Length: 92
Image (cartoon, rainbow, N blue to C red; front, side):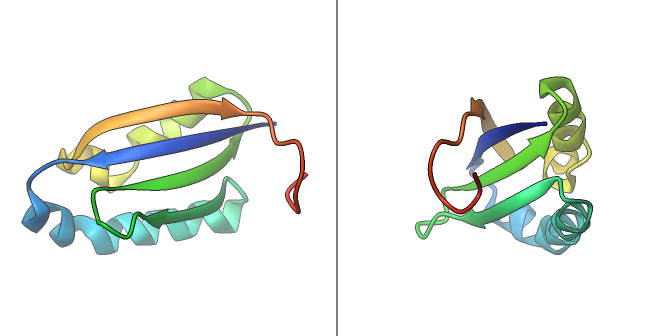
């Protein structure tokens, strides 16, 4: 399994994002239960979020991201994906 740090940059339509946020968070909860999402949360300034996923490869991660209600609602302006090689800490 590989780990990925994913940064979401929110678009300008805050009303649309807030409307779909409950579905987005419900979806993330299912990923936590499956062990695919290790941690997530928005930035304090509400401009985006950081999420850490565990997936077999980037293709699987892209499928996970595509199924997120935020994606289908079009509220994400940019998604930055980085495979992350954890070195030290409690997740290693």
